[in-house]
Image (tube, rainbow, N blue to C red):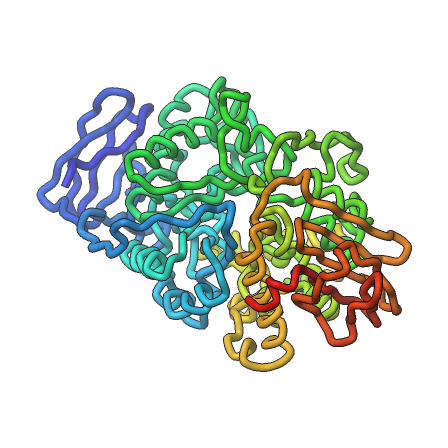
Length: 583
């Protein structure tokens, strides 16, 4: 294998540590140090000592078998026998994304165990599996957004080889894989980058820790650290794309933003590999530049999560108005999101107390990922409440219909398809007891600020909090979960069969609504979604032609009537041409 290398531009001396032996490394250009060792094959353990401190894991460690404080282990990516030759992922624009957390998706909580459940996803009609972060973080359990060894798959999930087997198994079933990555901060435990060089800066601050140095002195190699990491996941682990966490907290005043650099180098890698690669942003900015091309002043990403659509839909279904939901609530917001992309496109936000966002003029719905639930919107509730605990089956089915027939790329959160009764809580397993205690106390104070009872806040460090968040795979076999699963499968099948439902043109979406009577209809070509969100009886005008037939109905009590659809409570009916019913 290649010699050992590490970037430590300000160090006076760097030593390579291999077991009981250590050897001085040779300084080279650009702050890089280099050394050879007799035991340098794949599987050899090593670390670095910087100016007498350490030994520390390699910042680019490919494997941390003993966790964030242990030795690094060398890995030859060329030794894995891939079985996905000729693989080509489906376009994201026609896809269905499924977000899952490896540790809670199955009882075992490993990469290998996820493989056993892939047939369920393929049968559901999923096209892209989105893995929450898997980079090495402190302890045996956590969400993964506090990773510190960004090149090493988490040891408790099974390590590098098991992750490759999972990706390979996905591809064999026609499933693309998107990996969630975090480039705005590092976790607090096991974070040794600061001992090596100017990875962090005090010029900016994030809510989760020190900001990364992407535009100051020494930032060229820091930028390479993140870009090379992204390319590694797509090249060496055959990932089909990345979801980039909280890009609004990636602070970079360079002429070429890190995201634009990453998009450009990803496009180059795509050309070399000959398969599609996608980059999806999570952003709080409502900024169209994220997905516009660099020629138009944008960064060139393929899509971004549409938080406005989620907030509008959630508030309309639940009636909640706390926190950022204060900016939403009316069906007009749902209608605007479906036809304009953003709700806040430069208008005043009460929650932020300022104007927010910019119009998404010219963007396709394919530039947005739309959802009713995700890990944040469930896990950041005090009891990890899924929508099924907040609303009844009629509203739940209506919400599913509105986002699965939307012009956006739809995304499900694990278990959502059967209305999982298990919560998804915030959990950690920090090895440092003081840090664990601080996190637990901070969580209680955070929810107290929202007016929730601190006594209801589960302890993130408690193992039971983690275990309660695991999916119960017996649920899909019994009611009411089986019914909800059939409903979601029907919607996904309709989306796949009706070409108008994968058309991203926002200008072709027609929405009508009645705020006082709580009904909304969405028409996309010959498909018409008719929803009543009211507890009372409602006759909702049908937006479709007289020959339209019922393709899907949330309950037998929702019946098509002359000139409209009659509801006895909350529900949804999907109307369409007769030829779709026979498919």
